[in-house]
Length: 403
Image 1 (cartoon, helix red, strand yellow):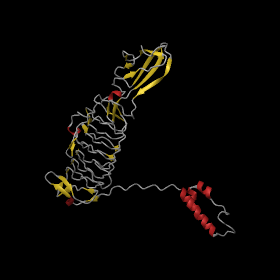
Image 2 (cartoon, rainbow, N blue to C red):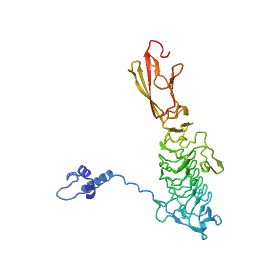
Image 3 (cartoon, one colour):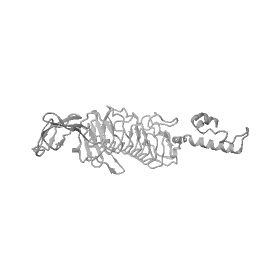
Image 4 (cartoon, rainbow, N blue to C red):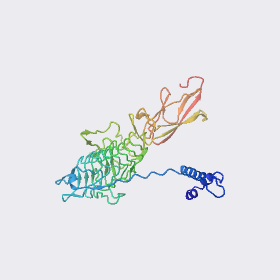
């Protein structure tokens, strides 16, 4: 008890009982003293912070027998898993032959929470670990628990290979080939972190590869990345991203084999919008980087991408240059769905501004753009910067605001 009082001196001062309160008389302890001490202790404990919940234990991996696997010796591929462990350590060899490939759907929907891949593994087939409950995945030695094997020369991750699991972090190996990150390979997880992009020359991020996750950002796209497939990051929470000019294949029409794919006999064709690479991220995604292959668009009900969003400042003066109305700022609200792509205000876009009607004034001229014949619209030239100031000049009048 004294240790608790020492740890919380303010509590000690606030609740320390007097002799009268605890019934002390003549140096003897009464029953009421005991009751008082118990009550004081209860009060102290009620003020202590709640215990912090312990982190969930990491996955416990189990050694498995070679007989838990259906293995094709000719192709060196596991084609089915029949074991009972939900976190198997896949053996490096079966029947004395190195396991180099995980076949299509070999571990699909097996209730796995973890898997330790063999060191000699080279390829992971389409849907190989689809629809499990994997919470962690070790494709490189970085951060891997002691005793968990990892592949040292993994070259390819097939379409839907790890789709619809519960992964939160992905570390991709530098051993992947250029087309080694297949379509929808990590779709439908809880991924909030991609640690880094592989250094593979000409790397292409497959169609829908990280679709439907919890990403708020992605690592900067490095110069070795040349392709980003349609819907690669659709259905996340990304706000801004830079796409460098070294990306030469983007969205639909990207032209690389792995940028569109099929799985489960369903053909995934490129969407009508320009790739929808970052569509449906809870708002428009701001894209910078100067890549002319990336276009601003508004996807129906799914926001879209805005390349270099622009801000237009409108000023209102009379013919003497005196301000007659406060400035107005015009820009696209990134959190609201726009009616169409034409409504987006961004660099490279052509914008038409409504000329405000000011009581007692008629429009005379605009500093930028061209007034329409009815003088109700200012047709601006294509925006070449992300900021523009337009001055509307008015003259006083007793008649209508236009002439």
